[in-house]
Length: 467
Image 1 (cartoon, helix red, strand yellow):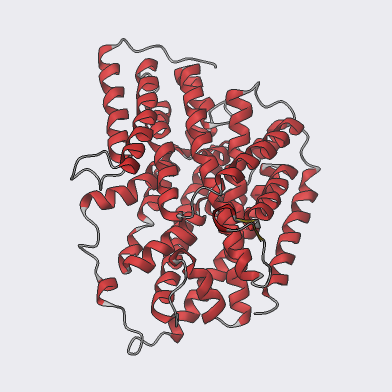
Image 2 (cartoon, rainbow, N blue to C red; image 1 turned 60 degrees about the vertical axis):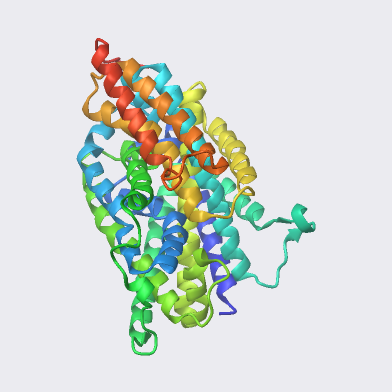
């Protein structure tokens, strides 16, 4: 696969050229953030799938499956069920006169809800962008094994691959915003579908179950995780997708409400197929790789380079790069849109949006050097967002007459409690029996309980017509 690096580089150059071509279509800040609210059904479907399937799938799900086994096939439940529910509310989202999720909250529940939503979104999404940089660096190191970009020694040593990958993502996202991101997401979706599905098919044909049996520890379906363990794993992703600003931003960019609904239903099918195939690839890697990966999260990459013929291995490597980039640019764009819409003076000019992309992208780069754990970091980022914003979004779309102060207090205490619980876990302050409970469940319970109690004891405020 000696030519693989050059094929992937050509793929990245092609994406950049496509983004630059579409940059001339950006005439306003709304064009940059929402593609002029004109995305067609097939483009919207492609960008929904490419956005949701990111490193949480290609690295996080793969890591879980490599270590736990067939039980990993339950992981796509969160995204699949969430996308199915989103198909129901997508038309309502498209009808909202908003540019971001926090602005939707502001329209319904006032400025405090909008600001809290923006703070939670920026905190969670910058973490998500940061581990896309690390994932891109992991792929780059495999593509260019002879290139050493580590500077310094010992604890002060720094790998510069995340810097190079971050520069590409930042500049690419700044080119044309959602116009270029959505179009190239379709290309990325095609590449990832072909690479993942053909790669899995080939491995299944080559697999000899007699000489490469599934270990007993990896064949178990029940008993691998406790009930609270499944809640820790599945609930964060479910909460994230129900209120995900990336997906909502794409619904807002649809041509009309009917297009948003059709695209969500199509994306549901795509998510089930592709995420299951990624888990299948990780399982094949567990059974067929001659040596265990240095990092189990990289099992799909090792599978591409060691078990596949050059053409398919190259295609799968390009698919991994496509997944990482489509996720990184989408979350970075959501951050810039929120910073402008909800904390700044609104969507003003493409130049302002591009400046925000660069600044926020660099902040995410600083975060990229803080942790190497894909699955755990992903789950906490999902938790931070989901326990703060998702209950409020459900109220905004389905129960808009809930008292504003109830939503605001629920959001605030949910956010604070998720941060405090995580700190207590890290410091080992929790009593025995609670140390296995991640922040997602207690923080969600606090948010919902406070929301219900305050709403029951306060007169409902009339729905705000503007924010």
